[in-house]
Amino acid sequence: MLIIPISHEHQRVKRYPWVTFSIMGICILAHFWVAFQAPSEYADPMKNIQGAQDYFIQHPHIDLSREAKEIIFRGFDRETREGLIEMYRNGRRPPRTSVVRMKQQREFEGLLEKTSEIVSGPIDDLYRRWGLVPTSPTAVSFITHMFMHGGFMHLLGNMFLLYLTGPYLEDVWGRWIYSGFYLVSGLLAAETFILHQPELDLPLIGASGAVAGLMGAFLVRYWKTRIRFFYYVMFFIHGTFMAPAWLMLPLWLVSQFFMASLTSSSMAQGGVAYWAHIGGFTFGAMIAWGIKGWDIEERYLRPVLGPGIDEPIVENKIVELAMDAYATGNVDRALEILTAELKSDPSNDDAALALWNVAIDRGRAVEVAPALLRVIDQELRSGQTDLAIEHWLDLTNQVPDVKANPMLCIRMARTMAGSGDKPGAAAALRLALLGQGSGLHASIALRIARESMRLEPQVAMAAVRLALSRPDLTQEERAAAELLERQLKAQAHSAAPVPVG
Image 1 (cartoon, rainbow, N blue to C red):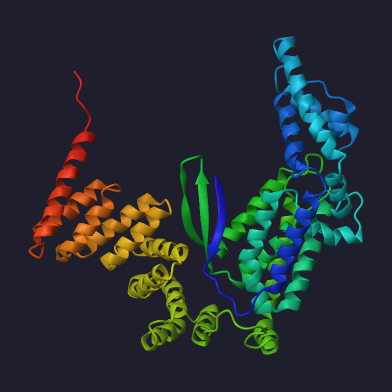
Image 2 (image 1 turned 180 degrees about the vertical axis):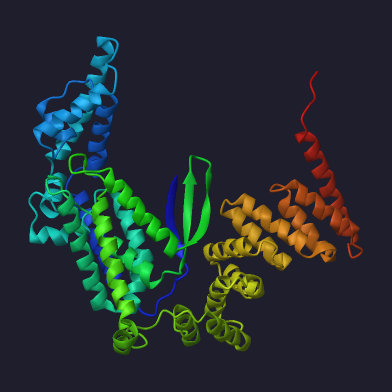
């Protein structure tokens, strides 16, 4: 099962996050610089090395030369290598025939040809020079290892988590404190890794230790923030869900402790640096806790930072006032401020979104659903379809029977169908049909029928029959409804199972 964070409620900042963007830029440039040092087929060395390792684990009775052992078990002493080889060989039966064994040997040696070039090639030299090797750390590598990555997916994952956490901490702490915090988080994460794996002769690379520090700080600073996650199970079960930071981030930390307990210095093979994650996360949470406990933001940082160093991305004093009240636990005061603001300015989308988030905390989602519906409608009109879908799913999850404008439901159904979410589109059409009951206008019922023919024929048939029962149905619309009814009946008849005897 795969669970990935994709967004959260805090989508706006007052200042452009130049430090975060600069870190991302340096990491991206460093990655491409490394990739250009060798032919394209060697751009992801760890993937090729892992392929040779996996092949040996599946076929441990092949003969290993001294060079092969150094590649498969690079970084380990001779005794450890021989022990691992013996362990793998005892766990599997040897091939039944010499022909099979010779075939496996040739396939393995073919992998070694490419892998050996990688191990001794320019990329590996760069990783060992600029990465942090626990057996021979240098002052420079403590810094440079944070900007090196072992492949595109490694880079993408770290940069995405950096983007989800960094800008918001940079916004409230200021650039200088944020920069120092990021740097120290990476340093302490690396030191934690070295303390637990001091004999490892492989380079530690990646920004994950520093990013883990941001995650720990984000947990403390925005602990009530709801994060949207994408989940993927096997090949056919997938979707999204919302969960608060105070629940999901500690669970992630527990998973890192669990995985670290399974990985000792004698077993690590250049994989995930779990202890670096633990060290960075713990440090980040402690620093954020100290800043919060001593009220450093209110007493020192805000007076210095002011309303905004750069041109504001968004500036909404009323929302800031309400969210400050919410952050201090005064939820009712936050609701009062936001409700009053929306009465005076219904077009304030920021206030509407903030009101929705605060209302959920009080179990009052039904009361503020109209405000979120207006935001969704505006997002659809302005082409912000991803945001509209996200807010719509959140709304229907909290208020399944929400009373929404049928035309809004139809537009949302089209949008969701276009994004590939056909079940969600069908659900929106059902809501459009059932929300108004028998008072639904005939022409709108006819639209629902047309939209739902391919998505959910039962909804289409119900909409057609409702349209035919309406006295406001014109002759032209009646003819169209009767045609749809015949098509739906023919479709149902062709789909019915044929009896056999």
